[in-house]
Image (cartoon, rainbow, N blue to C red; front, side, top):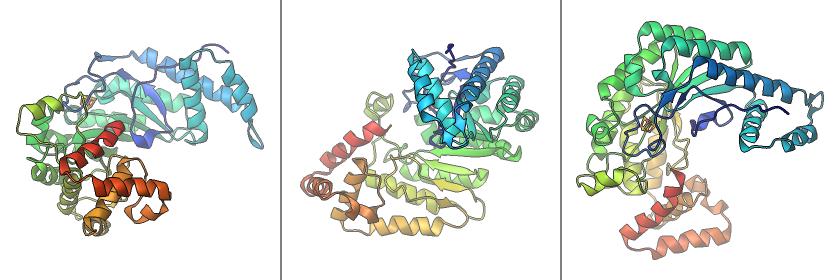
Length: 384
Ligand code: SF4
């Protein structure tokens, strides 16, 4: 089989797990956020429209090739496996797997434009690429991209209109915090005002907006500010999705320098949950009707999901019911969750007895609060 490969960048939003990943730009043009280690060693560059079109062609060819193995009785997995065994490089295998997964588990649904801030590309180039996707992969239902808030604020309404008409459906944006103090501290390179302007422009163009926030990123010192100012942004923008990513200080990140300089202390796991509670309590359900999503294992209570106009009372009650538990019960769940058992705290009894015993022993025997946080941290470090 001839070389059928296309470029694949390092990350995508969790909701794009079964999407095709189309690398339109490479690395991050900002690259200065203190908490982020993803692209620090690499320079940003764009790819030419012709190069990206070539990758789209390759995706379409792979789709056609794999489609040969679809029979009236389903997929001929043996034939697919046989072909897969002939692939000689990792790149070939990754590309083949991605297209196959997109066709089977992903129902040919979606394509995500990588890398970190593809919205910084000239709008007419981006529109040309999106139109080409629509022609070559017409089964695609959703085209999405990452975009930084200050880039989103600069794009004109005319360019948004062109991108929407070309077929751009959703923009994911790591807002991280709505607090100007926190944004400056983490060197996010944008302000609350830019977040609001950019977010509103996206929504006004009819493009869906999915924004990410990091409860805890302001540290203990700016916890209230982080919650309250973030809620202000949500109320002002009314994004379609608010995705929670509880902040955890990553070993080796520049946030360690922020901590060492003083004035920023990583908050406890439980206080970060209290911050989420405060954030939810300040969202105005008459202004925001999108969805809160805890679609990451880093969040302590993954059941905190719901529509902002109807489900906030339920989400607050759910958090309160956990906070009302005896401390030992809270700790048992915390440890289980941080060890990777993806549970609702009401389902702890479902764990194997031996696992339950491990978390119970840890919850009882680690008395010192600093040691407790350290232990939790050793597990959470793997998730970020
Ligand atoms: S904009 Fe995104 S990818 Fe770039 S440094 Fe910040 S968090 Fe990392």
